[in-house]
Amino acid sequence: MKVGIAGFSGCGKTTVFQWLTGKKPDPAAVTRGGQVDVADFPDERVDWLSAHFKPKSTKYAKITLVDLPGLDPRERRDNPRRLALLRDANGLLVVLNGFSGDDLAGELGHFREELIFADLEVVSNRVGRLEAGLKKARPQKEKDVDQAELDILKRVEAALESGQYAATLGLSEDEDKTIRSLALLTLKPEAVLVNIGDTRVGQPLPADLLALAAGALQAPAKLELELRELPDEDREAFMQDLGLSGFSAGPTLRAVYYGMGMIVFLTAGEDECRAWNLRKGADAVEAAAQVHTDLAAKFNRARVVGFEDFRRIGSMKDVKEHGLLRLEGKTYVVQDGDIVEIL
Image (cartoon, rainbow, N blue to C red; front, side, top):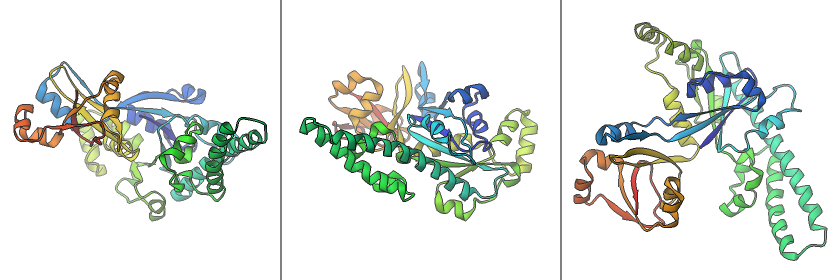
């Protein structure tokens, strides 16, 4: 699970990166192509399972975060190259300047225009190569494959030229697979975070921004970093004065994670309690592959119980006696919080 932190220069991306990961920023790494660190997905279910089983090892689901060079809001020329560094990410966390920026909706709209422009460049180049290839003498089977891709890309190109994300086309799974190698930015899930200063704490986000991004988040990243450095008593006093009930890095990571279309499944026992990343809608075989490719290849069945059922009852033996331990086959769609044992 890899999330690219993106935005215009000066929006506080690197501060957000440090706030979410705890890693000290390295400006040189950002300019060289991005700095990377891994954050644990905050999960009280793993905490509870670890306290219950007291395993030798406890591991949380991981989110890889990449802090990338900021885009130039005035000059588009170099922005496509910078955005190309996002193409291998599973999703984008767009940071907006909420401490000095006055037009957050405009800033988000401008950023999305840059994504559209970068994708249009990639798609148009590919369309040109496909059209040229179709004019050459080649086996018909190869031409049919290229024509199918070209038909999809023509639709994508038209959407981008009209200022729409490729995601608005609702491509089928097969269509998405056909053009997946292009790693289009406008097909990636997007989360929006307004990086606010302490003067905006407690204020609602503007309605025009929420009209563009209904699930937009906000957080005082720099302020929370500073508060973490204070002694406990001082921190509590400052937070009370500012109207902060707690730190928001954990809830932000959770919102971004689920907003990217991911869920967590769990494995639990005396050796290890662990949470695993899984895309929403994935089946039991895909879950098995996350644990080990051999388990997917040799998959027979899976024993499954929901976390809340297990916590309420307290033991696998009693869960089974209550009829809540299920045997599921290959096509079972794993649910968030399922405790899974692969057979």
